[in-house]
Length: 305
Ligand code: COA
Ligand code: ZN
Image 1 (cartoon, rainbow, N blue to C red):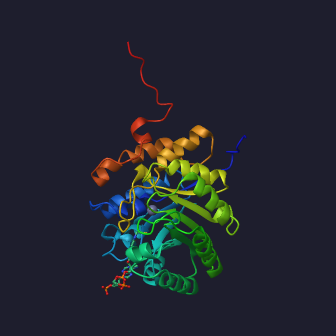
Image 2: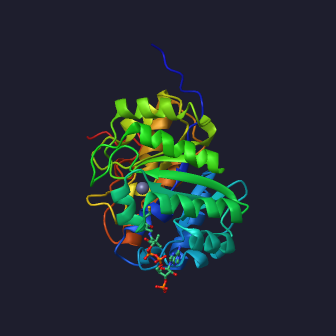
Image 3: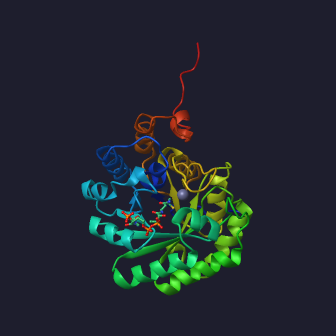
């Protein structure tokens, strides 16, 4: 079978949000702004630039307002803010976010650990956000492919939450594999089911590489018809309220794979790698991404004497 890899794969960069939320070292507001501006120059059309959650829950991102006010708005880039509740939506709108990413888990247990409320309370808050704001909305179903507390997640439940989001008026949908429990076969099955309810242009897949299956899951989702993917520079990331969480799929590793396969992304890999190489100094440790360490295939080495 010959597969078609001519359609663009859209990468939404999430390092400023998912990446930094779990970092122990405080990253200065100015450095966050410089990171986002550096990402804007790499060719992304969507950047999740921060979250508007309780500063007690995620101290690392407590300066979201200042970050959104400080960034240089590159034309054509949608700057997204993650939001858990009505208060977060109000703060994000006031800070100038272009789109809100509303997050609830398919797993009741993880939603209580992460958002300190039931799934129904999350949905009630989202309904109020739909009623009271006039802004682009995306709804994330966290733990769509497995929960670190509950294990398997019923696929019918994921589909039913997706349908509730859409019926409520939330246009964009993200299926998130919060702790890297998805496998390619499951991803293909779930993506095919969800695409019966959501156009491909509105569906995003959010994979963590916790068990090394991140890029395999991307390809399975692409082959099933998905076109939008979250990824974090350097492979940073993780949910602090999910035991064992680790980094998102790494943006430059994803873009390198796409470049080698001929899948268009519109992202400048050379710039991306240069930016990724600034991360260890920013966060104070090595980062998981591989291509920034190895270089591209085309970065050849001198022949030994
Ligand atoms: N932004 C800032 N402050 C907020 C807030 C928001 N979006 N939502 C609530 N708060 C404040 C309240 O004003 C209150 O402040 P006070 O103690 O000074 O009066 C305090 O937080 C508690 O409010 P409450 O509504 O009772 O929240 P909670 O303690 O039940 O926590 C969430 C609920 C959703 C706010 C919290 O669990 C949270 O922020 N979770 C996000 C976790 C996250 O970002 N995970 C990773 C991304 S998926
Ligand atoms: Zn994540």
